[in-house]
Length: 402
Image (cartoon, rainbow, N blue to C red; front, side, top):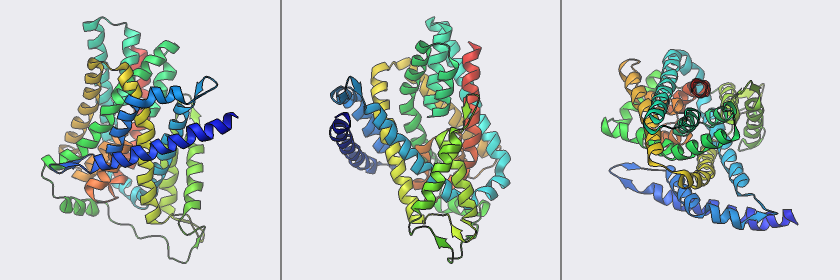
């Protein structure tokens, strides 16, 4: 009976909501003001509004036996989207990734560390200010601000690590509140940043793509066309790599793991680089990867946005939102200036690294569209693992400091 109720009342209606949000979101994303648009992030805005206005009534209506399954359903949508997007990005970046990383690995490591370090310092400063000015309890303030940091960087691993480090369930809830408040600007802020910087710098995208190609030359395909294909679209190879990525991401060392994102990105980069095993192709078609990438980004933004909208409205306070803005903008601005004037990275490698350093999946999707080339994914993929590990460690250290 429960399964029957779930299949009719919950699953069907939620699928309807997913498509309604997607349709309205893409319409919103098409609106362009002075050359700047939200693109796929328009889906996130509509999802946030849906969550803010309709999440609680919907969760109440779709209860079965006193339990609402809406949250679990949204998590499935979010994780499915994340797997599709990140695995696609890894396959696309794979052929050029290792060569690019070898040429620029010092820059990527330094930039990834710098971005997270600036984020951590800004979090510490805001926590100190919150305690001294508002007289808040140190442990509670630290839990809230570290939650804000993970939301500002849209970092699920940092969020999980912070919750695992605090001592009580009450402090875990405070971490979750901070994450929910900062997540909105954490997504939209980086998405707008990667669009506005080229506009303000009056960058010629054709020239920037040429610079990117000079620094990241195209690697000849390892496929000859004579390989055995497991299926015409590459769904089988994609699925195998996704499963391996999930397994690798679930391995834990203490409180740290690569997570689904890191595991799928790592495995798809490796398979994308080698392209085949013996005479068997393990690379999906380009059309499949581009479609999966966009579909995955859409599903991820819907799943995260609806839940985030509900939390944002429920716990919103202006001072915390401002802290979140600081923790989003400061690392990006410092990172961009450092990469441009010290590391001498070209614009697109710079912005791709910023997306990776901010661990921002939505921003990468926007940057690929803005830049008009898939190659920016290489800089993202190179910087992301450094930022992933650093933000987990910084979050834990900040909590232990107070």
